[in-house]
Length: 417
Image 1 (cartoon, rainbow, N blue to C red):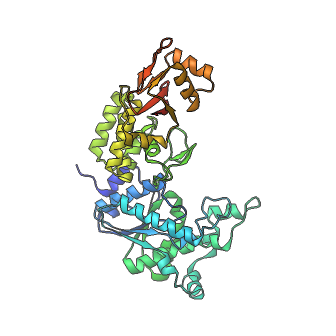
Image 2: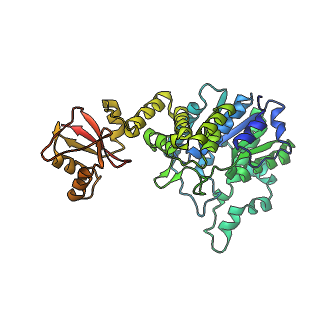
Image 3: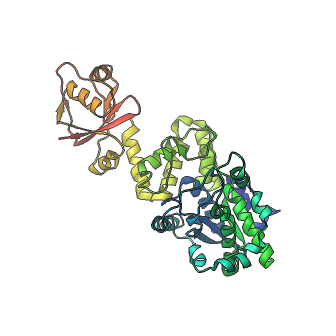
């Protein structure tokens, strides 16, 4: 049975706070809504991706999406959740970041009926006194001072807050008012951390124009094993830009997720239908060792963000690295992996001493004696084949490129001179 939008969003876990008294209101009439990202960096992270995929479900049910790039709000920076003042980006950085975010919008929403806008386009010509008179006059100070982050920053132990950051929610609230007036926007969708800023717009529209608009937020995705915000790793955030998080690292992040939350992540981060996800969950539960859910999740998210060709290549690379059968590297595969792993140059025929030197060179062993012990105990593999070298025996490296591995997962590359 086909689900309504409210049922779909509930099943996928996209319901947090909303001003709708009845969730089914979003099922009744076509809505024009907006979703925004500030260009504080030159890429979105996977937290933004979760909210963007919620937007896709609204679009798929016939609602009209306005995608906002916050060129104006990005000049200030959202202070919510920050313990101290942000460092301001330069105008050149903001311009570069805006272009990058807009391009990611076009990728994620390729083929969808969306409109991209920049709030700098309407703020650049606003007169300050006019803004205070026509907008600021309608914003109660008690409401703004009551925000948790403001109270924290103004407390005895707080770092304080500038007038600019204090005014951020007013600026974002005006975005909602402007889009309400010019585009007929009656709903803002966002992540849970934007609830306070979004409500500022609802209140502004009610006070100035007497209009009724709404907010729908999705919960922040939490890693069910660590309890921390999803996508925060020891190596930093997981970005959508391949220059900040390589496609290999992006794919491996999803592939290496533990079992605990992977089905929930399939609901949030893919567009697979409910019956397919439930079938994956059933098969995965029968054989968790297959890592079926992780493999499908990694492929689907990589395909969405980086394209099918890139996703197909990552499947092949994972097979080459961890497949367990003898597989040689092509030049393109080697080049894709060379930026991820250390590379040792070797000759065509290598003896134990050459392998020992290579293991130390690429960091798979801390000393020659340790490397020699790894070789002699069968802990070293070349192209997934266990290496056995008798005294004086040579290993013929017939391929130009090869994978050298110690144990199950400690990997480097070999390049034949």
